Image (cartoon, rainbow, N blue to C red):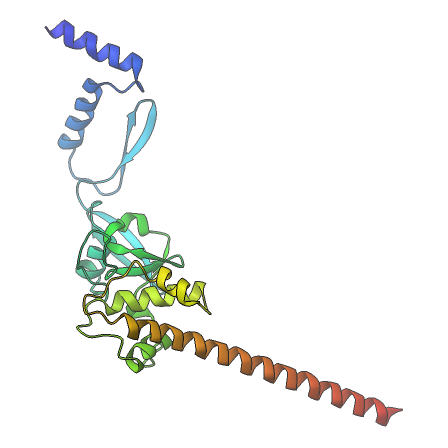
Length: 239
């Protein structure tokens, strides 16, 4: 009977990747018996070196809102749990915990991400922005101010995720169409139904940017025209 099992393992090893059931059990036994260590260890599986983290806590470093944070977390801990439980950045909310509602949205390297589905160790060496990092001192971010102006929140539980998602969306689409707006914010849900206020807030920010750009262009044209007139006048006097 023992020989039969051995023959089956050898047969599977020949047919597959070279990693038999017996090898798997050996690796599992090693993983359980090795003492908890800091940092990854390397084991060889199917001819390749694979880093294994944990099962204990490991040190990580995160770049959040242009500041460096350090913590020791288990490899299985999500970015959301790390933000809330380890770093006391509680703006991102845990609601569905399965990437369905967007209440935990943060920005990672310029893209909106559900922090409940990203491991903290995966977020290392990336630029992370949470709702706490949007304000400039005591001044609200334009998106936050627009939410206030348009009464775009009720219970407020989804609001931080929506604000961050709107910020990321407007960075990519500074002058969105209604269709782009509907698609771009489709990953965030508001159970209170404040969608009209949220859309109005986004459009307010977009209009403000358009006005700012128009004023800048006008001022630029006026400066250019004044410089031209000055040059012509100076040239005439020198002649």
